[in-house]
Image 1 (cartoon, rainbow, N blue to C red):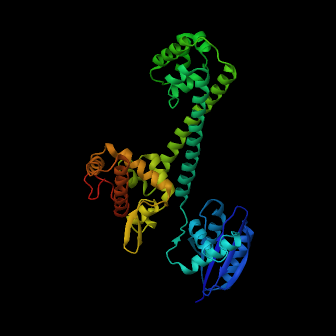
Image 2: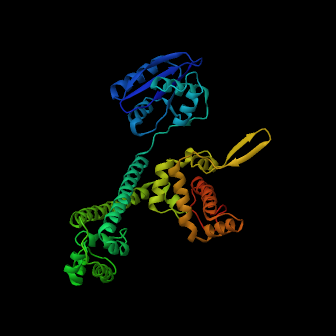
Image 3: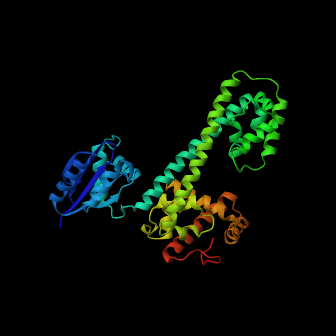
Length: 393
């Protein structure tokens, strides 16, 4: 049966497709509009060629979502050709420094024709996609909140450094205070009773009187009004209100994620591992997808950039830390390892690595790598983590 290898260079509006046979002879080389009509026409064109067709994409999901879904529905075998592999392979060809969509599509097709180790693109389940979307939205909100709070600190220290020093803007109380009272004069005019009533209106805030006392003490120490104080205070009040709304939305997202995890087939197993809370479990699923697609724990560690890389030339042979891998997946494993240090098994492993001379960061990385093995065993055996697990960490 004739083998046909197809490469599609994905773009926002116009993809480029190249199809070649087993000898590298070009069968199709044209633009592909990112529309249902053109993608359906391509599916018919490929079917008419006959033979065993294997299609390589350099992007999964996102702008490739429509093409990926329609080609999968048409029954084609899809594989992922990473962008780095495409760039390196193209640079190894004559004139490879010249980059164009047709050249990249041909390179992808050649990779599909010559490589048997390309990862199969499996259709994501509805619940996996929903988790991925909510995790992405949560990440955007967290990044925006970090920028917002940083800007608030910068503005507040410019007009009222005493108040900025005594407020923790990551908590609800100080943010609610700043939605109305910002300058030393505003705080002195309000007085303690009015400040307390304002804070009580937020509901459930702890240590309200202590917060009011700190603010009034700072106000008593600054008598001067800094230039542009009024405009700066107005901006701070706006940012404080936005920060409170963002906190509320983040809480709602976390509840939505927890509800989705309650329905996910692997979530309970993942969350049984110490240090894997709702957010980290959701981020793991969003980054890794179906864990069964990894053939071993080593493959999962390699995908996360946590497996050492061999460098050998002549008599020289050594292992080094990898530069690649999924940075988001690596962060999940590292952060969950750090969060698990309160668990006896994890602490024992960490302490052993410290006694061996490893620094804190190295010991946590070693713990994270061990936990990959544990997570793999938990999911493969469908057995929740228990203290004293054979490969416990």
